[in-house]
Image (cartoon, rainbow, N blue to C red; front, side, top):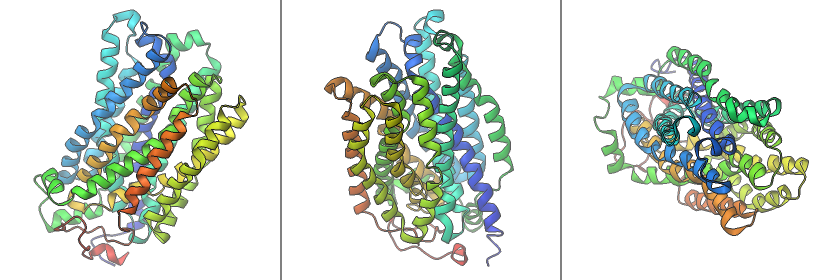
Length: 447
């Protein structure tokens, strides 16, 4: 075994845990705001009633997502030049601080229009920092993994996302269950954001202890880091960026509607109790959690394209029946339908972040994944709840979000049909001349 990549299993485990910790905090923040949208609407947009106030609150989520591509470019360049570890520590710090400050914000009643303005600014800061998070986490975990188990270790990023979603739902659900609605509006909504403070400290301390990516370290020994990663990406890897953006849009839209948006749908649209809707999200995120590493492992054996296509086809088949069951007026039935709808979500989450990383060589991987992922995220995560809620408002049909799921899944399937299989490629340390040229074996081959 090559001495350049020592003790790969130990390094892979630590890198995967570091990736999961950071993405958990990112999605805890993102989901907390989404779960509290119904509570925050009258506090920050009191002059707008009903759906208008809710749409304004969800629009703030979208504004933060628009900053993600800029953050991806900024932190991606730093990560490709100076390493994954240092930049990932910076992104999680900035994200956590902005989240805590959100919990300290005065409301509209206290400072007027400055309240929604400050809320929007903090969401933009969070979006900017989050833009550099997933690309770095995916790069660190996959570059640190043995070649034959890249899908398994790469799924750690998705596990962190699921834990963040579940943690936010459990926190908001517990508060909603024990605190009267009036107190929830007065001060209870702040608690989920303030909890980010100790989570931030733990994440920073752990990431400071993790080794940098072995492939990045080896690349730096063999050649100088790229001076302009974005230029190199746009010159030689445009197709990879477009593929990642398309798959990100597809998976983040289908998964976003099946998870975070369901709180808005079940509580504000179908009028189920909010606490029950939040605990439902905890179930639908945690119960299929074991499927994520299983799907990642399957992709090591059968290929990324097949596993991802299976997940997207699951959404095409299940979306309409599951949403129809949810609107029958029974919360237990809605829980069963939501759990079933999240099975394909877990399958696709097990493979996508490894697939993203395999589209680019090591020298520009952080930038390439960040750029493509965040372009897709502007339309996916940023607009998913806004679009789904608007569809219900415009059509009057509570089943309308199911058809948006199907549309997004079909987009993903079309893109998969244009891709080649990458699960057996070597994540080389040398640059390629073209994005889709045959890979050059490197020290990773021994794994």
